[in-house]
Image (cartoon, rainbow, N blue to C red):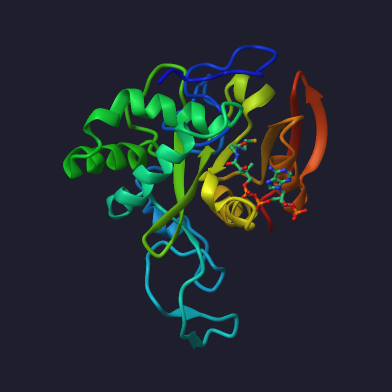
Length: 252
Ligand SMILES: CC(C)(COP(=O)(O)OP(=O)(O)OC[C@H]1O[C@@H](n2cnc3c(N)ncnc32)[C@H](O)[C@@H]1OP(=O)(O)O)[C@@H](O)C(=O)NCCC(=O)NCCS
């Protein structure tokens, strides 16, 4: 499947540099600050219990008062994990058979080109997941021009709902168009508030990475994404080509 870049204006996005969360991101010379910590356990950077986002599954959660609460866990952000393979693969199929204008389709198509034939193998899928998780480390070898990137999946039980990527620093392209964070929700799980919850839940993770504010961009025509960004109090800066650029505080 050939990746689609339909509708893009301005400088053409490098392969894999779209908005949603495919593996790897384009790079540029290193900016100071973010991304310099290495080998920090991702679980430590995820939001604390009780925020609706947790690094691992379970049927108990911690309420605002600190008391244990029974009941199912709400959907949560987790590090990519091979336990979600079946649901993830189903989601990829949804992306590639969905709307051509859906930027989630382009990334899914690129991944299928690279991995699809072998993803049915649990071992291959596990190595794909390991590769995603390794991308957050500074020392991980990467294509020249790509930057460290923390990938997160949004899951409900064993169901994969969506994914989000935090680019640890800018490249010229990311500063102009791509932003720090990209995300996508599988087509059958949309319009339930998941993207908004994902982006909100990712802000403390970005803060842990040293980012006081993050640039989040969307195509002017992408009403859903614009609403997601505005729901987390994105501050509109400007429009560059088709991209609307917003800054979002990661909190104090
Ligand atoms: C953009 C995307 C992530 C939104 O995911 P989602 O889980 O449906 O978003 P939410 O449910 O949090 O909805 C956020 C808002 O957008 C609205 N919305 C969602 N889909 C919409 C659509 N197709 N048209 C108009 N509004 C839409 C929702 O009603 C909600 O608005 P509200 O707060 O006023 O009720 C999803 O459509 C997607 O994955 N698209 C493809 C990849 C992509 O575009 N990524 C973002 C790149 S910037």
